[in-house]
Length: 339
Image (cartoon, rainbow, N blue to C red):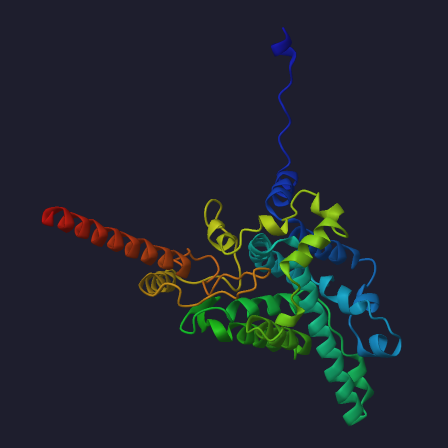
């Protein structure tokens, strides 16, 4: 009776299901960045947020609106920029946050934003002082690409020199990939000074020139236990001691296929060449010694992890121990025969 009166369950909402999966699979900082970009894009239909958030030299230097330096990278003004941000930042931001921890990843994003915008303000203020043109004071820096291009440059600086990455239908040397990408943006949208500075900051970060800006891992742990304790208890927060390090770049391939990314796509032949070269010369590219900011150790994003220097050293030590044991056994047998 009850079964005949029961009504079928309503079909699940695909949009709600996709959002729940996004919340479940994406760590907290990456999720909040993408959510902020989406909200600012929607709010932009009613209010132009660039007037209050863009990094403009006149407002930052003469009206002391310093908050613009931190807020401007997290404002989205166009649907195309939002779509590319989701495609490029979701997968790689997720893996980077899993490898570094949420606190270190958030600090990295803020460092990229501050360094890029401060350099932007200094250059334009000097240009205004030398030329006397007031127009330099009204240039602006806004959008996630002031951070994302720096992230790309940081990752590309760790890749092997002979490696290449695909940009649409073209293969570009990995070390020059951020510059080519910036040139493509400038071709369609004019000279992008802030994005160019972001690329420079990303290279400087990758080559270790900004290591003094990296707090120690113990400092991150202190922040998580004090000022960030509320966030550390929320779902999706990656605690520093639970970060996976380099394994995040290989574990992401086990399971769902990662989404499209402008700066991680390589053709299958290049991946096979990189894997074979890694197998023949393991440990060729070493990761930085600072554990608070692990990187992929020179592997292309999305490629399988090859043998590491640590595993090679462990294998050599085990082989040496076996040879030593065999020599001792042969000496003992010879002594027994002599007796």
